[in-house]
Amino acid sequence: MNMELNFLTSAEQLETGCQAVDRGRNGLLKVYRDVVALVQPRDDHGVAADDVAAFADACDRLVARLQQHFDLQEALMWSQNYPRRERHKQVHDHFLGEIRYLAEGVKGETVVNGAANFLAEMVGRWLISHTSADDRELAAFLRDRGFDGDDAGCP
Ligand SMILES: [Fe+2]
View 1: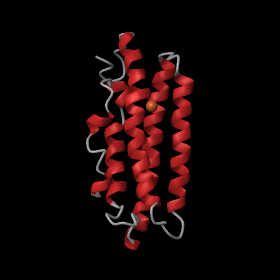
View 2: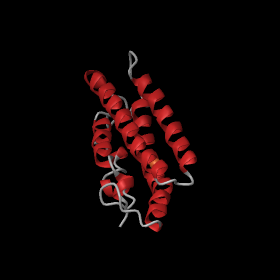
View 3: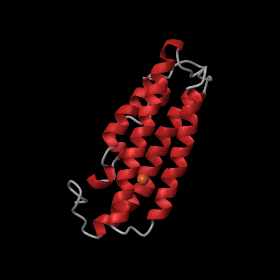
View 4: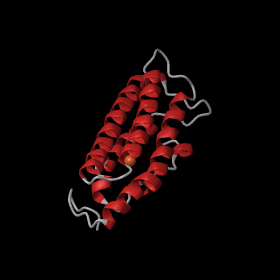
């Protein structure tokens, strides 16, 4: 793995302490690692010519996993009448739109040097930031309500 992208190293960095909020995150992290592994650890941060198809496939799987993870959280927010659900969903939607745009870009005839690195780094940093703020806020709300549904709930 490219050491410069090695900041997102464990599932613990993406945990809120509430399993219902964290659902789908291990699968998301696994696909994210597939994306990072294809970024060249060189100055240009591109993708090797032989890996372009694999990189595009990994990006597709990453978008699908992000969508799945967000859908689960949003269903939880609506079922629990979370007061900040609209704003939290907007944050998801905005990020997913950006990642879809970038992922489409890397499926073109070339993977522009820097674009692959940018996508991988942006996703990693966003996930850590979003988990530590918006997702933990949701987890705290559920915990305060004594939520115990969806797997183990929020003990
Ligand atoms: Fe979220």
